[in-house]
Image 1 (tube, rainbow, N blue to C red):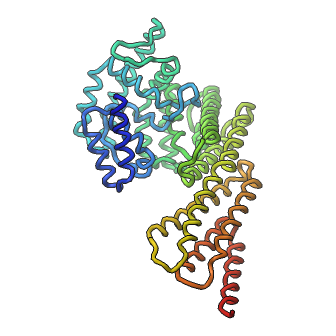
Image 2 (cartoon, one colour):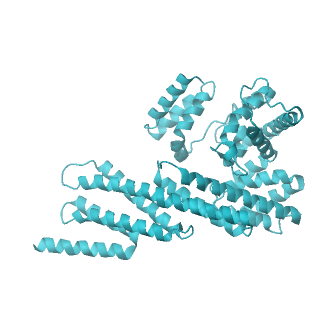
Image 3 (tube, rainbow, N blue to C red):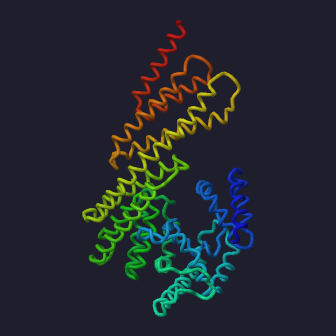
Length: 453
């Protein structure tokens, strides 16, 4: 796509961000129905934060179908910076171009088959996918085999440079395609991501699939487990399942697999923690607090179930704890504090009896409440990552600012009483119910004195 066309679609994306949900999805649907996919991909990339919240059903295309089994391990990092078991989004375009150059008929056949499949027909999509994934896996394996013989990575009809890193990613993806039907079957039957816990049904299903795959290919089994672990809040549960004697794997192979999977999962968490540490700006601190909590849960789960006695794993876990702690204390709590302070300042300005925008007030109050809940969420895992004292000091400072906000609340309009309720809730979230009760009693005492005067 030309540079000026990219700029136009970026402008469309920016304009679309302000649309209501229904209209935004209508715009996206119109773009995706147009010939060619470059425009839709650019628009979707720009709108990803909103689409993450909406999670709209999408019309399946051959390209989306191909990479569907690997979507849970796709990350935005460059290939050379990836943790084991992860795939860079940078490999998608060259991989797709290789397929188009080597076997356009297979792509066209999948496109034709998908034309009448609805966006929510997951079973129909998977039926088409079975043959498609199998054929593409063969094409990619032949390509990789040809490169190993000739040393020539470029393909006629593909104008992108295929680096060694990209070639390794394609090889890893071809391993995932070996077990793509099993991955999609399990994704349909297990809870939606993130999977909080494995029920008895889930464990029974996973044991059966794992045992079946172990008889065919340990490489495929490893790829399958890596993808499913990426969907879990507590990936250590999968390692425990693999370690269980009811899973029929040769003992030496089991030990190797558990160590490899544990190391890959810990490395993935450590990589995400390092990315957090290095982030320059936090655009949505509340969502960041949720993501951080989930990351800490995954780290704790892996530490308890993987072979934590090995030195390299211990070092990775310790480094991840430090990186997460640095991010929370130095960046996340600062962003939450700034958001809360700005909203409280805006509310303070509007304390009088004059006309006000009630919808705007509600948004500000909601912002303040969400920030306080996020800070409390951070306090919940602070001890786990060794920042209990630092976070406690920071919360104390923030609570003191909130208390100063309450100094102007006296007997008066109904809006002041609403602010009092908000103040008491904030103090309860940040400092506990005892401190909140003291704030309330102090306020009532001040009111009595003012009325008496």
